[in-house]
Image 1 (tube, one colour):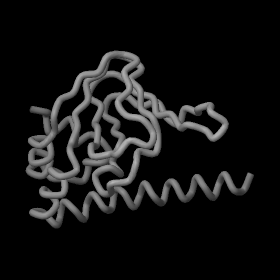
Image 2 (cartoon, helix red, strand yellow; image 1 turned 180 degrees about the horizontal axis):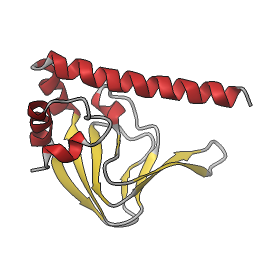
Image 3 (cartoon, rainbow, N blue to C red; image 1 turned 60 degrees about the horizontal axis):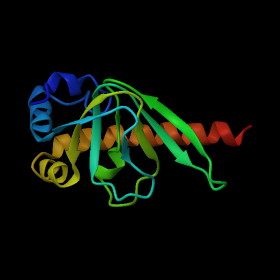
Image 4 (spheres, rainbow, N blue to C red; image 1 turned 180 degrees about the vertical axis):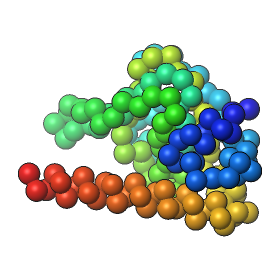
Length: 146
């Protein structure tokens, strides 16, 4: 099982109590990927969140001209795919392993069931997502000023 304190160091789960971290960690599944492996592609249906325990991943956006642009390089303690926990819309980017990686995944259905039983946990995670949305809005404002 994933060490609950390990996910507690990530921004996504930092506000959770030890008991809440244990509840989340108990639902997560270990997945190992080799360097160069695709975790998911833009347009795939998303149903999992990922926490990086070891290794690196790159997040790529496909461009209309057929090219692609790297949006982020993520490493241990970081996470991706959090939108898949809340909606059933297609993935917004490709994610590829930069090196051999150990990830922990959380399925949307398990996450929703956990939230149903713990409103405090739901509120804390909604606050994290709201902060991420505010950060994205600031970035959009900064880009539009250029």
